[in-house]
Length: 223
View (cartoon, rainbow, N blue to C red):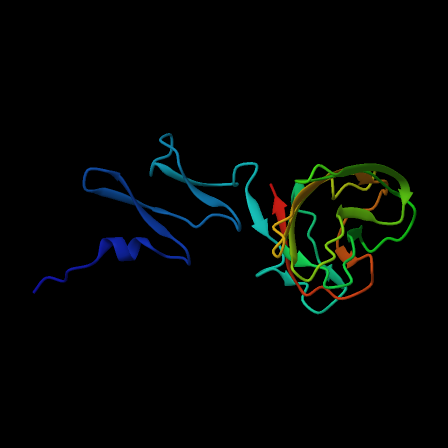
């Protein structure tokens, strides 16, 4: 009695191998790609497929699941790898509690007078402010959220973060909402950190030194 073999199964000889069609009733083995590469269509390849580096602009969450701000006044995200082009940070639904406090950031927890930023703030009732800070000891990410009923969210981009020879441009924006009065506000900030050290950690802190009641920080690496 003849033995029937599964030629597709025998074509696989390593972890992660794929079997891809090469034509009518024909197939070939495609070996697994390098770590962090993605499967991409390419008609020039025999299988019509290849493993490739993700396109520029793709994001990878560095602090898996996000980092909670609840019940603390200072949060540090460590072990940021120097494998991306820039960092993108989302701070979601943060609240300074009844004592309020501005949202500040210190790369590598540096307290030296090496930050510069231009901050602008405006609200739905027509009030607003602007300020330029030179040689500050931290970078302002968000203005005071002083009510327990207030929530805010911010987005921050840090370019050139892994460089050891130049400053790091930083830009951010955010919104605020008082859930009791429905008061609305926004803020923008542009500036940078004048330090020739690659950023390997980010410390987020409350300027009032009091604990946040809510908030989550997400740090993404951007290719």
